[in-house]
Length: 335
Image 1: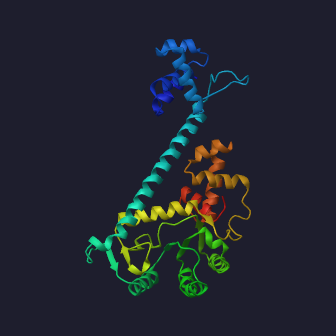
Image 2: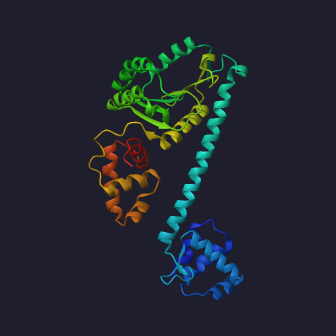
Image 3: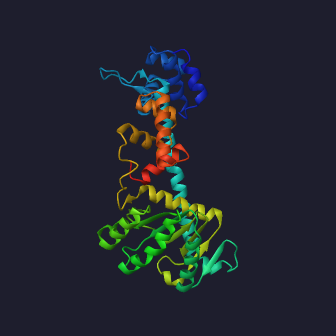
C-alpha cells in the first residue's frame, strides 16, 4: 500500500511516537520484519514488539490465522475507524463527567442560594415557602411552549396527587408540549404510578426510571429551572433559575440521566412496528454519532443505501438531524 504512510501522516493518530512510526512502516512495507522495524526506528526488538502489542490492542494489527505474532497490518479504512470510535467514546465520557460535575455544582449553588444571593438578582428568583412555589410553578407550566422536563425523586406520589395532575398534563399535551418525567425505580412497584404512566404515555408523554435522583427539579423550555433551596426539605422554598449557563448544566444532567433511564412504560405500537434489524442498527449507530460513511462500513452496505435508510428513518421519527433521530429512537424504546 504505497500511500499508507501518507494517509496516517495526515490523520494524526494520537499514538506514542514508536507505535505510530511502526504502523506507518508496516503500512508502507507489509513484509518488513521485527528486526527491520527495529533497525528503521532505531529501537530494540523488544521495544518494537511492545509497540506492536499496543497497535494490536487498538485493532490496528491482527494475529495471523496460525495464531502467531500480530504482524498483519489492518487497512487504515477499518483500523483507524475503530481507533477513532474508541477515542470518540472516551471524549463523550469525559464530556459526561464535566456535565455531571457542573450539575453537582449547580445543585450546591441552589441549595445555599438563599444565604448569599440578592432577592433582586435578574437570573434567580427566590420563592420563600410552598405557597409561593406552587403559585410560581402554576404560572410557569401555564406558559410553557415546547418542553417540560421533571425529576421526581422520593418514591411514589399519592394517588390523589397523580389524579390532580392529570388535567394540567392533559392540557399541556393537547397544546403539543413535550413532557418527559424521570422517577426512581421504586415507583415500578406502585400500581397508581404505573397507571398514571400508562395514561401519560397514551397521550404522548414519556416516563423513565433510574436508581436515584439528586433533587426535585422542573425545567421549562430549557430556559428556566425550578429547584428546591434545600433538596432535603422542600418546605424551605425554591429558586427559579434563568441563567443560560446554569440552566444548560441542569439540562445536561437531565439528558444524561434520561439516556441511562429505563422506560416505565414501553413505547406504544407505531413508529417501530416494522423496523428491521438493519434499520434498528442504523439508529443505534446514529445515536453514537457515527457518520454515514462509518455506518456503511459497519453494515457492509453502500453509502447510497445508508443515506437512503437514514433519510427514511429521520422522516418517520420527525427528526431534523441524524443524531436527533438516534436520540429519538432511544426515547421511544426502539433501540
